[in-house]
Structures are given as structure tokens and as C-alpha cells.
Length: 244
Image (tube, rainbow, N blue to C red):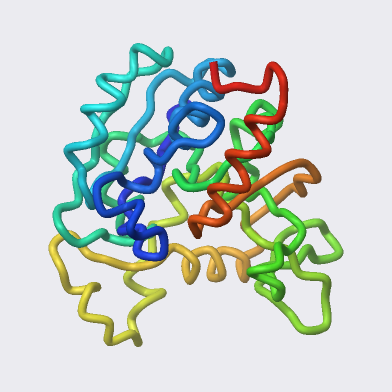
């Protein structure tokens, strides 16, 4: 199994911190956020990692090298000056990921989730890790149906938030043109195209093709300087919980 780490975002809400450092390279607990992921992937035996790049792309190889310092080999998927969003970024990275299921992780989250609890072969197109809704996202994203599969958010159900961590089959992208056929977004006509992943997930959910699991442990979406500072303080206060 290979892994894809999304690192192409502009990090606009994190400025001025991200004026010179991409968000996934900001440090918490003594290591860049993305390094926490790399070390966890290596520990579970995933050594082939694809990282997509846009904003300050040159900083990643400067900091991470080829990945060998963390027990992995990194392949770069460069998107240019304008990020392709999660769907477009995943589509562009597919030639590097191959035809097998892969683990995809947002580069700007931190979690104590044990990645080895994730299935290597999802039953459908995707298997997502869900968390209880954080204060900054109270409505959630998806809910579990009676069969335990994920469905789009509903006002009549208990909704949960997608953690930004999931296992995907390339087939989740197979009919992306059809999902967006009524959209007028200019990014769809780009070469390569730019589009979000969420509409594809909702389409797969309607096909009963998305499973999921709840993570009851720790998780932080490092979306603001305050949340980064809070996470850094928490990790620094835990003896033996450094990134090394």
C-alpha cells in the first residue's frame, strides 16, 4: 500500500506563519506536522509516499529530503501555482499511486490514530475515519446509516466530521466528469482539472460504496495559529511524547 499526503493548500488562515512556511511544515511537539504522518506510516510498513505540492513547493524537499530520514521514499506531485483541490490533486497523483487502494491523509491534521487499524482493502470505493464534531465544525459532514455505511449529512441523523484520513480505491475518481457535469466551475476545464473530493464521496455514498470508522482519540485540524499553539503546548507537556 502507498500513501498520499495532501500538502498543496495555501494556508491562508495561518498567515503570517505560512508566508514563508507551508502549513504541513509548521512544527508541533518538535516536528513538522507532516513528519508525524511520515513516521507513523513507516512504523506500519508503508514506505512509498506521494506528497502533492503547490504553495512554497520548494520548501518540502529542503526539509524532508527524499524521505529516507523518516523511513520512507517520497514522490512529489507538483500542481503548479494554483492548487488542484483534493479531488484534482488526487487525480493528478494517481499515476504515482498505482491501481491499488491507498491511504490518503490531510497534511495539516494531527492525530493519535493508529493507522494500522485502517483496512488495506476497503469494501467499496472508500473507507473514512470520522470524529465527533469539533467546535469549529459543529454540523459535521456525514452520518452512518443502519448498515454502518456513510451517507451525506442529514438533519435527522447524528452527523460526524471527516478527519481527513481515509483509504481510497482509484475507482472513486472514475466518473468524476459525470459528478460535475452540471457545474460551471472554471477549474473543471483546466489541464489538469481542479475540483473538490467531497462531491465524489457523496456520489459514492449514494451507491452504498463508502464505509467508515469512528476515532474516539485525539485529533486536531491545525487551521488557525491558535490551534497550532494549543497543540504544540499539549505535546510539549507530555513526557516521552515528542516526535522523535
